[in-house]
Length: 71
Image 1 (cartoon, rainbow, N blue to C red):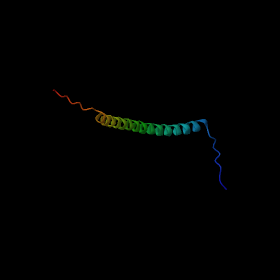
Image 2 (cartoon, helix red, strand yellow):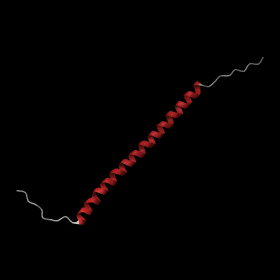
Image 3 (spheres, helix red, strand yellow):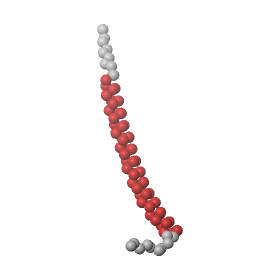
Image 4 (cartoon, rainbow, N blue to C red):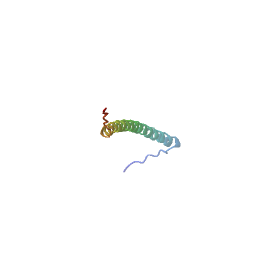
């Protein structure tokens, strides 16, 4: 048969375990937050480059050539 531990769980035991879990969760959230900020910055830079290139292309396409003749 299995033996049962007759120790009682105290309030301090629960508090220390919850503090450990909270510390791990905080580390995970901070790591995820850093990755999210980096991904958002990269996305913003890529979007700016894409808009710049599309703007240059449309500017070249719609520009008019004007001839001036003297007569």
